[in-house]
Amino acid sequence: MLGGPGYQAPSDTLRIAGVGVGGMGRRYLQGCASERIEVLCDVDHGFAAPVFRKYPGARVYSDFRQMFDKEEKNIDAVIVATPDHMHAMVVLRALRMRKHVIARSRSPIPSPKRAWWWRLRERRASRPR
Image 1 (cartoon, rainbow, N blue to C red):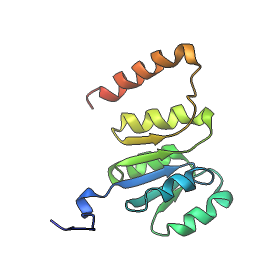
Image 2: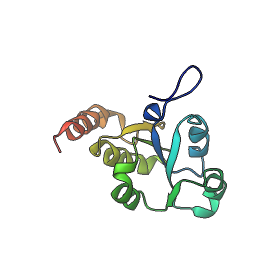
Image 3: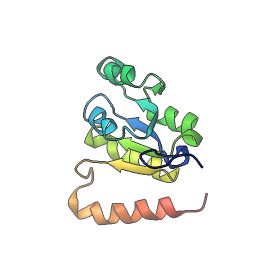
Image 4: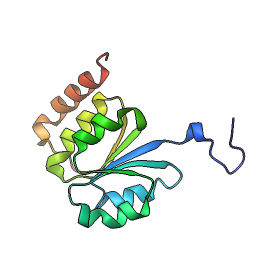
């Protein structure tokens, strides 16, 4: 086992994917400096270019579906920083893959339906694969 006082063992390091990294996502990634940023995804590569340059070892995608299809085995957690109307699709896809999800946004679901939506999310995520 590697590690020790002041060091994080590789087995304790999360492999993170970021979706929507051009805006607020870049700040969320900064909070994960001790983890491995493996994959980045943003539809606007021009706007997200500074983030892509900051993490040169990360693989880059413009479509989160392709990213999930190709990188499912290479990531442990997903940071979702997409616009509100895209949150639900990305979060549900990541949960179905049994990934840890970090998503900070107002709920994309109107409040009367919110409890129902979260119960549905939990049922789908807990299904055996």
